[in-house]
Image 1 (tube, helix red, strand yellow):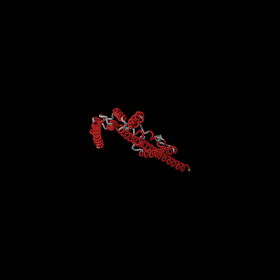
Image 2 (spheres, one colour; image 1 turned 135 degrees about the horizontal axis):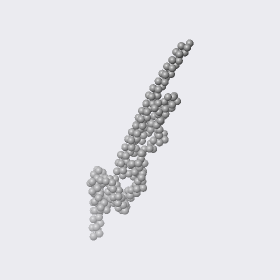
Image 3 (cartoon, helix red, strand yellow; image 1 turned 90 degrees about the vertical axis):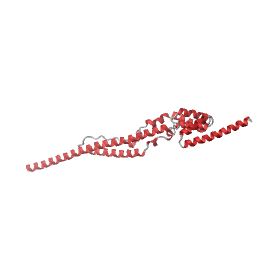
Image 4 (cartoon, helix red, strand yellow; image 1 turned 180 degrees about the vertical axis):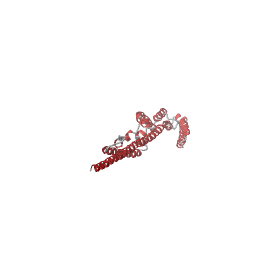
Amino acid sequence: MKTKLFLASLLICGAAFAGELENANALFEKKDYAGAMKIYTKLADAGNPEAQQALGQMYFYGEAGQVDEAKAAELFKKSAAKGNKVAGASLALIEERAKRRADIDYWIKGYDGADLKTGEYQCKAPRIPTMSKINEEIDRIGAAVKNWQECYNKYVTHLNNQMPLTKRIPADVQKLMNKEETAKSNAYLAQLQENLSEEARVSSKLLLADFDAWRTATENYVNEHNKMVKNAKKDSYWSDKKIQ
């Protein structure tokens, strides 16, 4: 009789846990994290593996108020020990995060976009003198700036096509990031994106300003030189006339 009463008690307890777990899941879906956490914690402390897994996820992703990976791992271990396969997979994820820490940090604070400016997009600015006096140099400078402009336009198009830079995070690294790391990475890459665009605009503005100054000085010199040559020919003509 006692055994039957004990079994009945377990069934009632299990049904109660199931009902509370459903309530906690519903609150979580509504983003009432405080309410969900309160129930999950109660059930987890009572040994419910599903609640332990769910609470562990909240600590892992920061929905418990802050990210606490150590607390999450502790809960996953308890749940996995009772056969929860999701908890086992979560533990494996945490272990993989430890192995790939450098890769995660690279996309949070290390990536500098240098790979976007290699190969055909590596636009070396030509050296522009203050002024040119010979046709060969004038032609060379003009051609160099034209080639740079074509490369620059291609680079800007390429840069725009890579936006947002979060697309460049490898999928296997992205899935290892928690909520806080993803937010930091998004902010860092957004600022880098702005910096790269501004860098391109400034470099173009400076080079084109140098080119305009060079062209103005060169044109003034050419015009002055042609005027001098014309006057010299005119003086020579009249000088020849006098001699005749």
